[in-house]
Image (cartoon, rainbow, N blue to C red; front, side, top):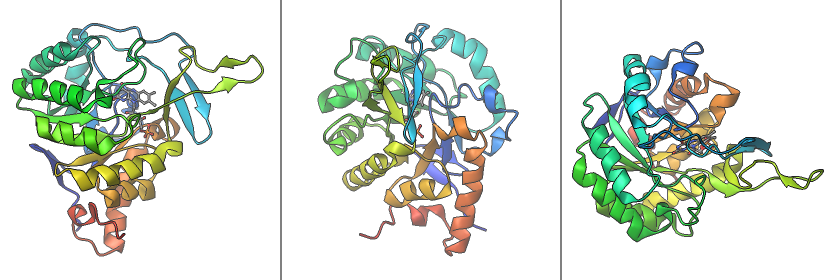
Length: 304
Ligand SMILES: Cc1cc2nc3c(=O)[nH]c(=O)nc-3n(C[C@H](O)[C@H](O)[C@H](O)COP(=O)(O)O)c2cc1C
């Protein structure tokens, strides 16, 4: 028997496979395709304090080996989420990680975290400081180490829950940002969020999505994501949750070898809703075939 168990902060997962924020809705949508209990953890769509309608349509388009999205954090707001979505999510079984984002400044992150902290059943908080699809926010918090430190520090003060900070790839030195989150007390980092990108319809000469630019995800971004996980792993001691174009077992294993303790599946869910469960089985098989007893032996085992 191989051991797939991992630990992130105080969070104990039975396997390292999670579903990424925004690509799995509130899990209900997937219950007919798979046994959701088998997942390592579920990360919710990012929640803001107040409801958000999101950006105008069209909000997604296909690109070579990927997709662009500019959903703009559409969500029902924290109150409705707690009342209507959370009870169902908690019934599923795996730890629920609630992703939160501020529409204004650092104070809103703190307010959200304080409220989420009060709900005992929520396993962890993921701070989305890296959403590229909010208008009028040219510089993300996650593009500035000082701003990142400030937000994470503020949130750390009001919650004892496991805290994960989600990093943006739209930076020059992602390891510097990761170090700032570690210094501020985050328990783990997750990376990468989408890469800011654009696609144009040459017939109409119009951008394919209404908000002009969006976030690129899917296999097209995987080598960038793997490189960033590898870079960050050399600079911090806390666990990394790796994501970006994971489509199958080999791509998940690639992230773990680069240094990720856990992995998250996003865009692939739209193509094959069962993919995360297949990856859990696939990782188990990979470990057996390679005579590795525990997933922990594989983490960061890259041979350079
Ligand atoms: C349609 C869509 C919506 C997303 N919404 C969120 C979100 O609300 N919060 C967040 O942190 N990331 C969001 N993401 C980013 C993913 O969680 C993930 O970081 C990114 O897509 C890279 O992984 P992938 O290539 O496996 O999709 C979204 C991605 C997609 C495709």
